[in-house]
Length: 297
Ligand code: SF4
Image 1: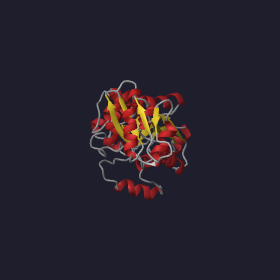
Image 2 (image 1 turned 90 degrees about the vertical axis):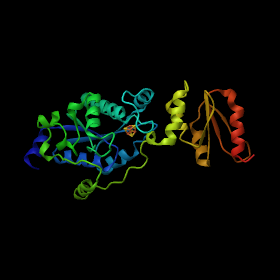
Image 3 (image 1 turned 180 degrees about the vertical axis):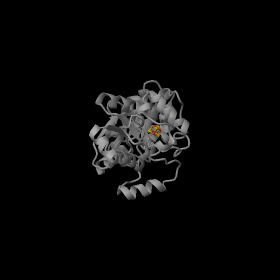
Image 4 (image 1 turned 180 degrees about the horizontal axis):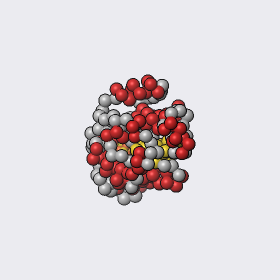
């Protein structure tokens, strides 16, 4: 252990990281661990993204990990994101800012010295350019303690660097979309990583279109409906009613396992899809027609 590493260790410096489970976040955590900093990781979950990759990767690194339920925050943001949407229904700037706000609140409550992420300057042209990184930091309310170890050398100094809790000289200056330096570091650190699967559904065009319909119908924009519309075919039956019709046995099972008091319809003794109606129950005959059509009747 060198002198600075020992110092951080002796000072009991603690950092809480936003962690999706990708390579950049793993490297960010490793850089801080190498400085003797105690690291914990948090992965956000909502109907639009899962925490599974974060849990696995944190487990592989043997680091303390927690899931943070982000559902209420993202549902609120989707109704009116102050910074607007990306290409689809993805309010990335406000979403990131809200994540760091939650993380900062947790850090403050639990006595962490700072928060961090694996973001890389310029890796994503819209959401990770210098302006966006600064904007997210400012909007979060925790910009002064938000460290991005992979690009810190190219960014303004943060409080943990200024206070000597982190050695700025040993942070990196990576920018751009290339992954060469990260791959080299992964090999040096012996990090076993996978490209995270899943991703965020809000960046997918088809799902965003479905969700946008729910958003516009009073009462339908709920976390459970956001889950339901992931499965099968989606139809708008009227101004205020949609239905989802299973496309496969897997869809049917998923839909049946999720419904509570919605109107559903499936054929008795004949193989065919399950339909779930969201909205005006008097539109049932329309859904029945669709279920019969996809059953080949
Ligand atoms: S891709 Fe999805 S999870 Fe990531 S910042 Fe954008 S909206 Fe949030």
